[in-house]
Amino acid sequence: MNVWDFIQNQIFGMKWLHVVLGKLLTVLHVDLSTKLGASLHFFIYDIIKISVLLCVLIFIISYIQSFFPPERSRRILGRFTGIWGRVIAALLGTVTPFCSCSSIPLFMGFTAAGLPLGVTFSFLISSPMVDLGSLVLLMSIFGLKIAVVYVLLGLVIAVAGGTIIEKLHMENQVADFIRNAKAIELPQEELTVKDRLKYSWEQVAGTFRKVILYILIGVGIGAVIHNWIPEEVIIKFLGTGNPLGVIIATIAGVPMYADIFGCIPIAEALLSKGARLGVVLAFMMGVTTLSLPSMIMLKKAIKNKLLGTFIAVCVAGIILVGYFFNAIQFLLV
Image (cartoon, rainbow, N blue to C red):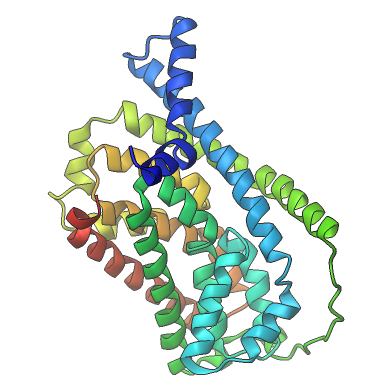
């Protein structure tokens, strides 16, 4: 085993934990060869692994995020125009909140401050879809190549989506209370290292409380898929035999509310059962970017025409990315 395989499998993937838990459950007379025993093993392992990674990642990303408060982020974005503005917005989205509902207030603030609509939508698409946490979590399950390509294509969707929306000149589709708002210049408070560490720990505690239920649900669904649903059923609907698998997965993901941490165990179980890579990743993108609660929140900020355009652009981009991953799966897995 080379150094990278060790990092991916033993540090990010925590395969050692899987072995230790297996031995511990065996000592406790749990038969891991049964569906119930295997499900229990999967559930405990994934809960611990995702929780540990979640807390470490949130702490690191929150520390980085402490250098980019909303006012500073707005000033950074305000320096760039055109395609570069949308690229910077998409990249800035990778170090901001972990779910679409948390991104929408920032989107509203940026829009009220007069930033171009394409820039704010590139941020709104990127923020929940391709944060830095998704890179590490995807790496722990799918490997470096898939994680990097996923993030790069997520950024492409964000930039392309923002570009399309900006070219359509739909500024009049933003809610009046946002368009008429006045940007307030706030003094920038310089935080000490102690302040940043405190902020990071608070973000860990707050985010963990908010997402742990979805992690439990996601891991529970993953355990059921992994051990109770026959492989041929998954292959029939989401494998090579169904050319509509990507579309089905994208549409199925939209009504759900979860973030990348809740999606990972479901994606892991689906892939292990024979689902195509593009299908699994399209499902994850659909859940994280277009969850129903976030669309309800967004509806308060923009009018129906713009909301419909945003959803259509995201769905089309996700489906294209899904089919692209299916086409190159043999190069990545």
